[in-house]
Length: 376
Image 1 (cartoon, helix red, strand yellow):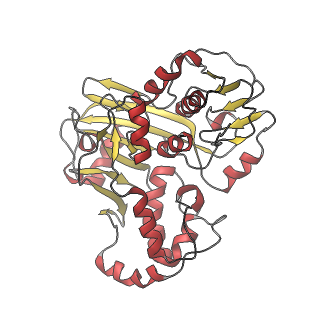
Image 2 (cartoon, helix red, strand yellow):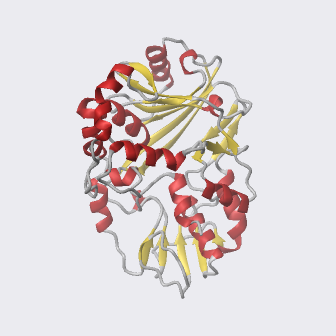
Image 3 (cartoon, one colour):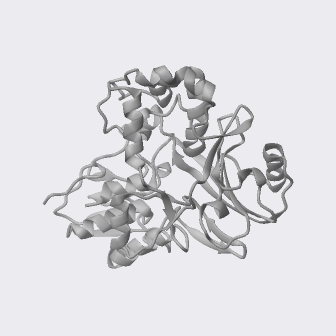
């Protein structure tokens, strides 16, 4: 049988596969095995599926507990049609900010003088051995150490909660490239990967996705499963925090609804911050999708943030007082892998005897990457 492994470890495909965890990675694995005609069962310890990918509604609008969108690709478009899902696109021409030198900077995040200064570096050759390079080490010859730190650290820290000198390049950027060619060639390669694609969600939030997959495989899903130890031939898809001694960090997602929108963030997707900020990023929910909602913002932070701190922060960043109508905080305690060398050392300690692993154990944590790994 032609099966393309998307997991690490060994599975006996001739025997029943026990998928441990009914989050999005477990459901994706089950959907793949069903299409391949394999015998499997998804064990979910909770009474609901979807893991972190949950959507709820308040009287003021939608509250996403984790991901609020996903980058659409041609592969995903076909996948959503299989599931009878109708994606809704983000609004056009939304600005994307980073907070650099105490002010908001929009793409390309450098001014014309800075761009002219580094433009000759675009013709330099990229490193050829990327196996152990950090993001910082890969880009520093192109952007210079100062600009690499000022641009890539906010942009990546706001998403992955780790600075550019700790993130491994191969865990974040496309490696399907002839390294040793110019940086300009690599820019074009990256652009081709996303050209014409936009971020999307669904009318009732991102939770529509796991629910749609569940409808396809529900006869093979066991809710409230009380597994005390992993059976043989298990594909483990539960959070890596349950098995890793180190290598994960905590994130708090706080959604606020305001009386009035933030003027400086109009027509904006959001803003990402560097490692010295108390927060990782701010998403402008009501700006991103055409949903009926009061002005809504999701604040990602490493520690729980109080209402008084939010008001002070917004006043400092945007010079605007805010009136908070509603607030919802959802913690991911030790739920986000730190994509550095320590994580790879923790992977080596896992028990691979009659077990395999998928989800936040593999390279590429994005929802798009997880889905595309399982597409036939």
